[in-house]
Amino acid sequence: MIVDWAVYDKGRRDERPGELREAIARARDAADAFVWVGMREPTPDEFDLLATEFGLHPLAVEDALKAHQRPKMEVYRDALFTVVKPLSYDDDAATVTAAELMVFIGESFVVTVRHGEAATAADVRKRLEDDPRLLRRGPVAVLYAICDSVVDDYLEIAAELQVDLEELEEQVFAPTGGDSARVAGVIYAFKRQVLEFRRATGPLSEPMARLASGTTPFVGDGTRAFFRDVADHLSRAGDAGEGLDRLLSDILAAHLTQVGVRQNDDMRKISAWAAMAAVPTMIAGIYGMNFRHMPELRQVWGYPAALGVMAVVVALLYRQFKRRGWL
Image (cartoon, rainbow, N blue to C red):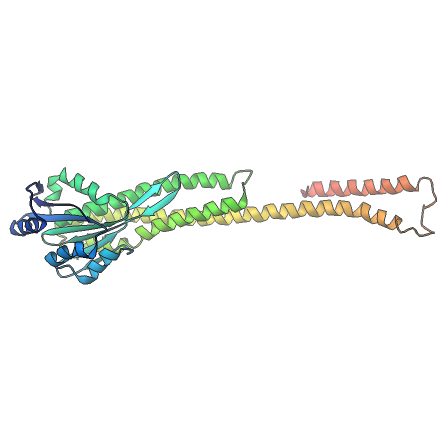
């Protein structure tokens, strides 16, 4: 469905009512005007008018309709097609959710297609309408503002992930250690969120580098600096995601090492107690064989002597195991 559309002339929104076809015609007739159509999960029939009017490439139209695209940029004869992934972070559930935003820009038009719950395009439209000086740069200003907003969100989400990761690290290395299976599950789930973050930031580096270099159409020398700034912020977000992933791997390895150490400690304790139990069991087993000729069998002090030997040996073993840290 079409969420919003308007003609922008010299950075100002044209409030004249009319049909979409009329707005497209007005944008083409004016020298410094363009039409911006915002759509959300359009059907092929809804998108057909725009594809025909603006001459959008069938492959780009197919990508915009089907979604599930990785961040990318493709150059066609009459349009520049860019895909970005806006992210949102639920701090309570510790989950990163990705949406998709496709942006077509041409000489006199901008088409944004949203899949998911992100309101990036609407927020950018409102901010640009309050900044006519930037908006009068034309369709490329809309692409820049969208990329800038998405990448700034990446940096904020990276900071939130870092805070949650520090809390997870304290939990893993707490003296109690917690339930090992639960902690491992939490680490793995957190790693999946970082992976979702990197899936959005990593592939976007190449398109931002091309936009910053000025080798793409519709991007003039006056706007290259804006995209260089976005590319710099994206590089910081990518480094943050890589650092989070590496630290998570180290935390998981350290946790598994802790689990192994605790299991070894448990095995040593079990072995120590089993050794102490084996001595009296052996002595009692020998004297329980009821042979006629056994040492001290008919002595008055034989029974307490056997018990004493058991106690002394167990005490010596306990002292030895305690000294070695097995108990």
